[in-house]
Length: 234
Image (tube, rainbow, N blue to C red; front, top):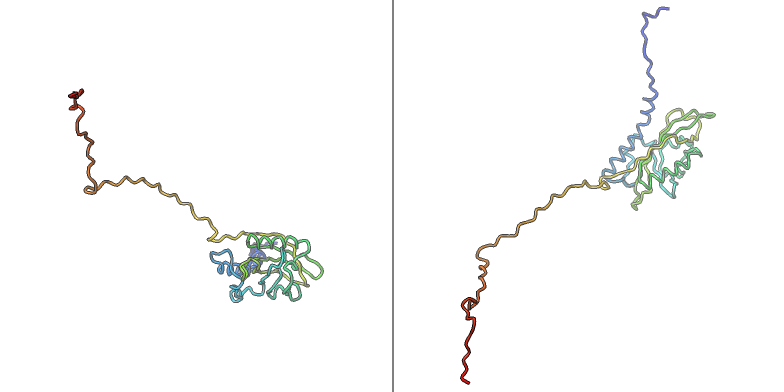
């Protein structure tokens, strides 16, 4: 069949483009956190204002570290409730993870708190009955408490695709940790110090000292007699 008169078109997959756009709220939360911290290591928990992340609020959460490797949700957006099919406040963050990934997430939480560091996790929930495959990403950003210790996290969790039945739990497929540096913690640049030229002794100012006279004897040696005659009348 002759298709010479028909127009052909290239088919371009938009899956990757749509997927990346779906994770845009993560970048918004991170940009807000960076703006708050400025040149510091991290902002304080008391500085977080929900209006600053209004477009990403349903995906956002704040957790509190209550023990090594354990952080409980104190505030959580509606998307997290949908993933679990229930209210998630008070639950550990590892409740969103499959049993095989919970230890890994606990260890990562400790690194974020202790280093401190920021973290992005790539997550995957496999297909099962009534549950289509689901991709997700989670962002973790440390915060200081009112006491000055690093015991809070601002985070966001976004899944892409049909959620299906809940609860949905995820395996960790990739973790990116970035240690935080502030301008205050950066070493100062080394500068070479110029060598100092030794100063010449100050010149004597006329009028403040008198010339030292040469030492002279009262009777020059050349004028003194070699022998002296001592006369006695006895």
